[in-house]
Image (tube, rainbow, N blue to C red; front, side, top):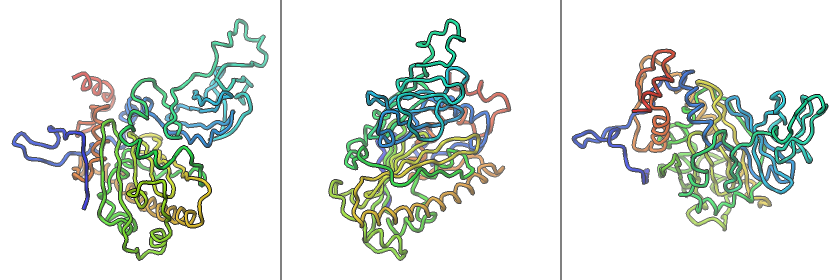
Length: 406
């Protein structure tokens, strides 16, 4: 049995005919999954103005600790200041545009020093020193600090965005914040390094797959053995979705799954209904939290170009775990590694099919409410995505502007 809660009203023009007959909602058209002009619109209207996850606060424990994020030609760095505040800046030197810091994570003492010419910035972004400053007549250092970016810390995770405006992460996630607090994310520490995979498919294809459990019985036999058919999906306004399922009492025939069921200890600080539940919280357009009783991770889909994206993530857990908990975390990793392999194969198959001349749009089951929310979000931001056929070359931007003005 699959239970679904939909506080958002159904869109009558997509799901109900004039005579009241309900019909399946349509997916985005296949052409939107690998088109350069459409991808440029996604970059400008979806990604640069949406919150992107960078790291966890434990990775910025001390003054000078920093973490970076690259997204569609833009570079960001978040850094812990000497006053304890976390700030975000473009990782672009104001002199000649080199990256001020290198690598995914690192630490500098009291300043960020560009490796190209040595321009040096304080942890608050102010320009502190310029080698050969006398050779820059009239240089006003206060005017050449690093450009700042919006930054937000939500339940211990650090987010940035490249455009101002719009609701905060906390505002969007508000329907689920109280239940997430029980997991104590802020107290967690990394368990393992960052991981990433480039499956060679469009970012929407990855998120489509993540946002529905309809494929679990066929596509993920291991998850089906663990959880059975009871799978809940709840959509909230603002592109936030929660999916959840619960471990069955019947032991799985698979060794890893059976021992996970057996060894997972009772996590006393969690509500009883969460002690054997796996939950997935999606923050559209392109990220999610995977939340387990034993640990959690973030799932971040980073677009790389039309038809190409990278998935990055990292796992976190509360420190000082028992041997049973450590065993459960290892088994969780084994199970989900297999799930990721299965998903990679599925989405690669879909990506090929989306380009087939036989395919225009698909239809959505009522079990795919999360996926529908994403497609509505894309169509809302980019009304040209409502067209079943790709517009003529060179007309995408102007046509989208025309449709947006209607």
